[in-house]
Structures are given as structure tokens and as C-alpha cells.
Length: 294
Image 1 (spheres, rainbow, N blue to C red):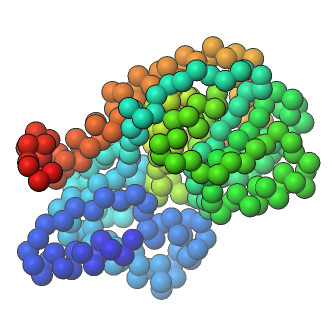
Image 2: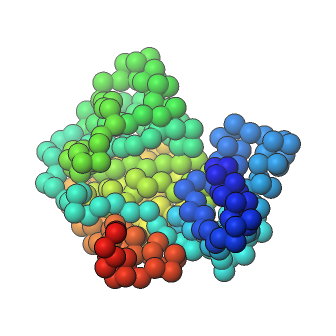
């Protein structure tokens, strides 16, 4: 995270222009997960240094409206912010046939770290009525994985599987193993993170359950394209009801997955995102492609 102000200092000395492309907002995320105290000297100094880099950048690229709003509230001019969503490769990740419907398979794929909600899914996993009809798969790594494995062991949970992280080349096949994807982050991290998991799931034609704040970018995607469902963190009963409903209505999943793929192709495929980044940089795609050294 400290790279942007360092580059900014060099750029200022040499008369260069530079663009910051934010993937996570610091120190916001560190404060949100408790790694830094909000008003501590370290957090304040960190924030001032990073804000300096943003103020002197030609543009600041963020991953969603929620992230843009967070920077706006910190004092950065909204007119200097560009929103460019993350993306997936729609040529490598394509919709494949759904696996057998019994049990309903819900997949969490990717990092399961401190910014993600774990308590809600623990409450659902421990619910006895779902054990025969639903299977949960966690594929990847992260700070919360070991704790979740311990929880499953202590509660004799047998309808949860843990898989290693997938390579990008095999991600499409991994995502096709599920009926529904799961995405989450804590309310406190709103605007500090924008999970990229959503784009791979949409590319694979899989709908998603998002456990997180209503103002999050993933929540707005689910609502706008009707390709997923949002549950408030710690609302275990609503999540159980939703899962039970989906388990007996596979057509809801198929229709939502198709909507997601259509929205992905129009808005979140790799070619769409890279064109937007080039536009922010002031580079025409055609001129870049015609260069002999590109």
C-alpha cells in the first residue's frame, strides 16, 4: 500500500503523471479488522501519507461505487475517481452443466480472511436440518480457514469439504462444481474491499449468496441483475430459509445463473475491464494493439 505515495514523490520530482489503482483501501481495511486502532498515531500517519499520494495522482481507479464513496468521504474529489470493476476471463470461465441437485452445493472459492464474515456461516453449518440436503465447499486459503476447520471438527460436521486453492486455468471447472457461490465481507469493511469472486461466479453462470452490507458493490450487482441474493451478516435464520428454498427450487438457481452470465458478458468480461483501464490511461485500444513492441 505504501507504494503509491513513494511513486508519487518520485513522479512529483520528475514531472511525471501517475494513476493509482486501488484494490483494497488502506489503512481502512486494517482498522476495520482490528489490526490498527482508528485514532492511533500509526493509523493517522498511514492515512495522511496515502491520502497525499491520492491527492497528487492524475486519477484514482477504484473497484466499485462503495469504494468511491469511501474515498469521497475522506476528502478526495469525486470527479477525480474512476470506477472500473474487476473482471474475469469469459473465454476461460464458461457455464458448464450443473452437478446433481441433491445435495445442493454451495461454494466459497478464494481467500477467506479477516475481512470476511465467518460467524454467520458457522451458525448455518451447525443447523441440523441442512445436513442431509446441503453440502458446503470451501476452496482456498485465508486467516479464517483454520478456525472454520476447528469448528467443523468440534461439532462433528460432515457436510463441509475443504479444498486447496485452484489455479486460474482450472477455476472454471472448480466453479462448475457448485450450484450457488457464496461471497461475504464484514459490514465494517464496506468500501474498503470489493470481492472479485463475484465476477468468476457470474462468468460460470452461477448465482451467488452475498453475506454483507446493503451498500456493497456485490449487493448492488445482485439487485441490479437479479443474479444473487443478499443476507445481512448474523441473520442466520434468513440465510437458512433462503438455502432451504433454493434446495427445492433448482429452476431459481438456473435462471439467476443465466442472468448473471448475460450481465457478465455485457459489463464484467476481461475485454470490457481492460478497455476501461486503457481509457483511464488515455490509451486507445487500437493504437496499443497496433504497436509492434506490444
